[in-house]
Length: 294
Image (tube, rainbow, N blue to C red; front, side):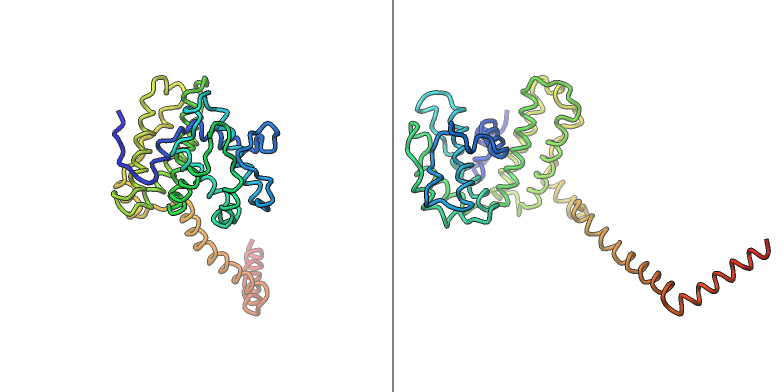
């Protein structure tokens, strides 16, 4: 049984319905149905108050809510979005606008003014505003790490519960990404009391708990499913000279450039200077002597 994680600001990543959220996010990222007339309108994104790059992001957000709505079972209580989902939607909204160099705070009032209260109050303007107020003060670098962790974990989860069997390498890329982002997250932790550390430990427990699911050996090769390293192992590896791919590339570049520069200088001197002419004469004389001796 998984231990109850300590409360932290990022716990909505752990507690939300990953399958529902990430299925909708994936569809929106692929551009599915954004301009479709069948999409329910939760926000009037074509309003004169929402213009420029803010409009396509608004349409993507509206479609994201619509996909969550149609995936819900019928019933007023079942249909309502919960706090974890509002927190994630707020994060997603900030993330999309940031990627398009738009500050949500600059357009937030116009955005809120065009939210509609319909569909059994499935989507609430007040609930979104409350979540936005919380999310905007949080560390987006940390949230990006956690988002990537749970996205990749959800892909593994989807494979495990799918009908596919013995698909070689099916889990490898996702487990590789989980290890990458987990280690990146631990490196960002100041200590074991931080909210990020608590959130990462919650992920670690969820991720490794999936190894015990019945029939997993038929979906993912055992070599693909490795336990995540501990906090101390990652910190020790970093302090004893562990370097990532970017650092390796920088080191290689710093070595190669001086060598290339030196070779270029030698070639220049050899071909275009009196010293080069003198060296060529010596080399040619030696060749003639060897030829004569033969």
